[in-house]
Image (tube, rainbow, N blue to C red):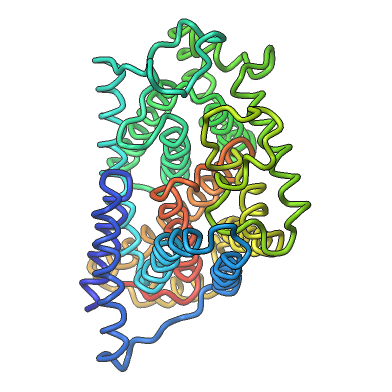
Length: 427
């Protein structure tokens, strides 16, 4: 059962960006294996992860919010089709990943799927994709913009949020990997940034610039220099991208105006329904009552284009606070993971005194490499969660099911890495 759980986690990590339904299927297989293992393996027990409490509280409050929904049957249907998937992802990943080797395998699976997503994005950009019927850009404000890639994701903004995560993980891992794998991480980083430019997603482009520039200033000037070179080259090569990014500071298009209007409407919802909200998943039903901008136009608004306001509106302020506790707790946990503990130093000293053969030296070197890997992964996860937090200000990417599955997986990986720094066994 242990192998089934591990393979299910690896398969889910690979499939989330490529085939979400298949990812859900292997998740169910892994969940069944987890339950069976608990029953037949007396040595296996569920372990407590650092932010289990707010995760459970979020699920409970989300369920209670169904009682406040104008259409309770739809809200409950939406809840039990989505939230258990996120919770089971967190449970399965958090309970399965107990060794550095397992963490390495899941990262490799995520890297493989990221390469496919990036290459498909390049394919769309090179061979063209018609977006004339898609409402992703203000055609009057940006008449030159004729294509925006979205690869295997639902739209360019969601792809851009995913690419931000990929870039952050690559940056965190670069310094912690052996030379060959480090080159691969750099190539994925460059590819992700190039594909990000092809989405023309202003918010995500600015977010990754801020995250990586901040990291470069605080930790590694080479990353800052690389971002400056890549960014300058992209802007010179593609004037449309430059105009698109500068528009954030120079003019307001319909996309920006609508976001401000959605936020105003959402704040009104929160003030009217502060405790249980309007009900899980029914934002589109309630929005017409608070429509201060579209004034009855035949357009369905499905979320608030702000992660924080959307949760507060749908499941109330207590539910939003439980999510923020879980989310920002996981974020800070990634940066709190011990870089070098006294326990590790004592273990290394003990091994050094026993190193009498080449095999002992190799074993010690392998332990050191795995510890460096967990440190780099922890950093990458922290940067990735920061990108999600910043993107959440101008969009609600977690409305997308694969994006939410990925977030809960990242949170569970963060908990596993934290455990790796303390109690996780070496293999």
